[in-house]
Length: 497
Image (cartoon, rainbow, N blue to C red; front, side, top):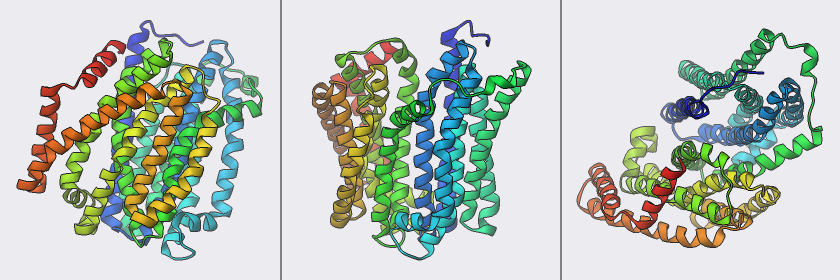
């Protein structure tokens, strides 16, 4: 049995800091890769194909993150009972059952899958997606096992090794892309992602092997133990169902975007990734503040509503300010970051789509905050049904949105379907009424402050200066007015932390 920290609070703080630093590095590297793709390859059929395949990669990685959350409690309990190796072996067998078909499909049916993703029967977009899938899907599956290895290390109170592996993998993958993109073309991005996944898996796996050797663990300890395979697969499915569905809502949009013309899918992917980054910043920050306290307390329906509202208020304030900046200077920001291929009308369109994704951002933060509470209060049985229903609804919504408004319609469709997920999730937690009412008030206040802060500067100043002045006015308005809901939320989160 491993030696425990004498200071649980300090240990949690250090673990959170290490994990946050690793997440910051991975996020920064992902952003740099996106900029490299835009500047090196522009906005073309090749980028449409690559980024469509990347959507599949993201889906599997989201599943890996969800499974990591699901297996950690079982692994921690197994470590306390001296059977961690057997539990890890059992989970590994279950993951092999999941990953093997995915890799086989990527190898044997990459062509048809690429055709579905790109919305085209032939052409450069499909060809690029087909080749990229053969690299990206195995890389994503490596993340499934890397997540399991990271959870096993966490059960041993080792968070730094997995964080190092994820960060080192990201940096190594970026290095390959920077060195080979010019000579080998856009598929160098897929190679870099494959190296990333390999290193992310290798580092924690080697660390576990070293720990086992140092502890003189007998080989028989690695025999699978614990729940039967079907029970493990069921737990994986429940944990991953909703996060996977939320990612698939976006993937469903890709074929419809691909039918809107060359480069449209690329623009939609970049708009989505920018919006998702804002959600990640807001949700991750709130997670660092509340994850440990929520693990210690019980929540009733009123507690669930209070927590979701407190977190959402801060997130809405952050997202509102960012969307105001993009609304005023989006075209200039897009061209400055992504290059000349995204200038003028393309940059304006991309910026507009980001702004239209604001409702999706708001409800996504709500889902991110509410989802773990389903596990806290033990109401997870409905999660797969919510996931399946959301996907069924998204297909006609995406079709109707793209037919009526193009990329703008796809952005709005994402907001509607994800909002329905949040509402259904809150119903299952008996918190919809309280959250919906107060969240509507919070949204109205934020929208009013955005309009009041940015409209006048945009009419009399240039885009960059208007964005800066508007942001200052927006922040000042919050400081002076101090909306009651925001003050209550801040007091709640400070007390919780």
